[in-house]
Amino acid sequence: MGASISGLGRIGVRGESGPHPVFESLACVTCPARKSDICGGLDNLEIRDLAAGSNRIQLKAGETLIWDGDVAQNTYVVTRGTLRAAKASDDGRRQILDFLFAGQFIGIPSGATYQFNVEALTEAEVCRFDRRKLEELMAKHPAVDKGYRSGTARQLESAYDHAYALGRRTAMERVAAFLLDLQASACPKSTVGTLKLPMTRTDIADFLGLTLETVSRAFSRIKTLGVIRLPSAQEVEIKDPERLKALAGTGGL
Amino acid sequence: MGASISGLGRIGVRGESGPHPVFESLACVTCPARKSDICGGLDNLEIRDLAAGSNRIQLKAGETLIWDGDVAQNTYVVTRGTLRAAKASDDGRRQILDFLFAGQFIGIPSGATYQFNVEALTEAEVCRFDRRKLEELMAKHPAVDKGYRSGTARQLESAYDHAYALGRRTAMERVAAFLLDLQASACPKSTVGTLKLPMTRTDIADFLGLTLETVSRAFSRIKTLGVIRLPSAQEVEIKDPERLKALAGTGGL
DNA sequence: CGCCATGTTGAAAATATTCAAAGACCGTGG
DNA sequence: CCACGGTCTTTGAATATTTTCAACATGGCG
Image 1 (spheres, rainbow over the protein chains, first blue to last red):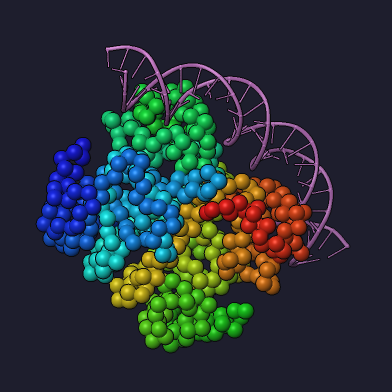
Image 2: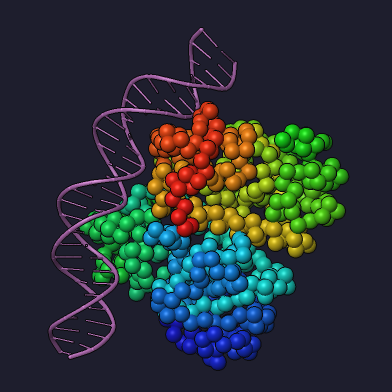
């Protein structure tokens, strides 16, 4: 689906090489994240400014983009693949804060350092913006400022929904709601109605505040009820969205 | 502590009356939120712009400032008292997202409507900014823009910490960490080291994703261990902060 | 002084976790 | 091409934590 697009995006911009205005702005024009928060408000001429302040980074599955505690110098827009943002404590516990798909941005520092890790779940590509340059861009282009603001607000809202799920939903409800959220998101799909999960049961558990066994049991249960089908462990076909909503307990929220 | 301050703030600005530049800017100068995100970057001359676009609202304990689903027209800065932001589902479950003390702002809409309630826990006062005027102010004063941005980022970070607590901490750890957070916050104190809780056990439970009984048991347990003292149900004296940190399991996060 | 909301404590029940074992899947190398 | 090893997933049974239900205590306020 994004093969030719990302192919173009990489012309003359291998790995961490510096910006290259003409090709970069071309890359922007065809970028899967072209309509995303930061880039969305600019026209194809204005976007050159943005392209000049950014460059692409290729990530292999498992690679870490952001380390907890690192000095926060960049903000990234995901252009391909899936990443996860997580907090880990040194006793081994982990809480995944969000799964990041194409179009989302990450790296909103409140202080001098990042307070979470970001790792690639699959092969991925991100567009890197230097914070200082990005702030200049925001000052120059109100559309960038506004996009950044509304993107941050959306992330805050999503964090609030997540808090409700973690604090007040049962295991079954969390898993059902998770599948519905994925369906509505930019999560890869094999066909419409069939999700191709880029994350493991452990990842899902760490996102939902459960154990991997509990997640697996919930999947099995929902399958047994005939609400989903599992062609493979990574593929989820939602056969009955209405009943899935009922399982998610989406009664007024 | 804020008696004379809020007294001054109310000169000629009773209830929901309109802005009154001179007195308002005076109110700003002595406002407890003078150094907060939105107002903090401006000098006493520039702040008149802000004062002209804002007005004070008095709230009684229990009053609702924001209704879930309302059109998001305002952003508020808390100038006195304590509020709570929460999501409620119509089956009676509730998740408190944050307790708001003086200096914090609330009402960052990602869409057209608010997605949570905000209610006053105590008698309170907030400063209301019309969203449209606030956006003009952000365009005009980079300091306001920056303050809003960093305030939002801080809220996002706090939401992430909360997600870790809700997803991965035990009941005991959540309660212990909650007390430490309160101690570090603008939560009212009777004396240094003694918190004056403006919220009930039920509120704490709904914030921590627990039941009120579990919260009560955790308080009792921590008291029995000699780590806190409870002069009354609403007062918590932290006798041994180090052991409280240990109970919070703050081992690397 | 007494009422009503708030808080505490106990015992039983429910939910999710932990520990354990076995099965499925994937990629690699023989 | 198939066997092998490792990772991921599923499922079961025992255990732990938290919730639920219930009763009683406390305390602020009319």
